[in-house]
Image 1 (spheres, helix red, strand yellow):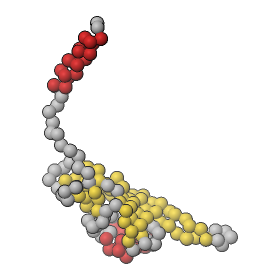
Image 2: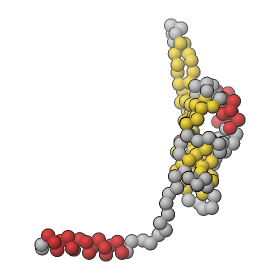
Image 3: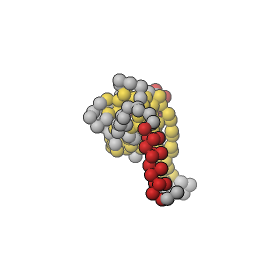
Image 4: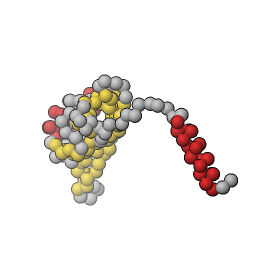
Length: 151
C-alpha cells in the first residue's frame, strides 16, 4: 500500500467511527466557588468570635453567574496551633491536626462543640473536597476549597 492510501484509509475509518459516537447533551461543567456561611470565599482571615458565629450557618456554592448550589458533602482539616514548653522550659509551637468528613452543608454538632472549646488565634481550618449539587437537578460538581485562618 502506498503512503497516501494508508492516510486516506485512516481518515475514512476515523470519520466512520466518529459518525457513530453518542449524541448526548453538550453541557459544560460549571466552575463553582464555595462560600463559608454563604458570605466569604477563598482564603479568609477572621476572629475566633466571628468564626464561631459563622460556623452555625451552612456552606454554599455559586457558579460564575451567581446561581446557587447546595453543598452535599465536604471535609475539614483542622490545624490547632499551641504554644508549649520543651523540657528546658523554652517555648515551642506545636500543631495538632484533626480531620473529618461531613454529609450535607453544615458542620456537625460534635465539631461545633469542639471548635467552641479549642479555637484560638493561629488555628487554620481548611474546607476541602467540597461537592455541590444544583438546586434543579441531582448532578454533583466539585467546588473550590476554603482556607480559614483565625486571627
